[in-house]
Image (cartoon, rainbow, N blue to C red; front, top):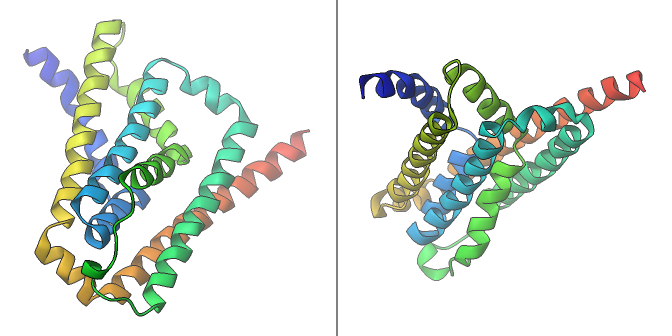
Length: 217
């Protein structure tokens, strides 16, 4: 048991920093929960979690190196991520400009739609595969068995559920949701800036990678 704890502690600590730090996924969960309530927030959080599980499974299975070696696929993923995040930025900017009544007068989106948005946010993030690839490359002990890999992957998966769903539950709290509507314009402006900055970052990375790839062709 002590050996297992010593093996898991640094991996979970690294995953915690990456999963809980502010970014497109955590801000999208917070926004969805404040704007549309707990059910929609949890659905989006589960979508993000599913995306995290998929990247984690790919990295744990050793397939991340194959994906990263395919430059065209990674470049395409970056362009897709930039486009999707830009759409989220425009959506938040539009919400900041428009006059809207409290969410009591609005219908929440279908849970399936929230789930798919969360899944897209994480699956289109090429940095996720880089993170999980590095996590397993440096976090796994030398000569790790398939059982060890499964234990670590399961622990990371469980932690991701607790973090993302926990964020949805927290930000769907009545007091926090009311605070959102009080400062909606400011918050939506912040969301627009964050999503827009992330979109610009992915677009710049994609263009640089594309330029470097074309020079070698």
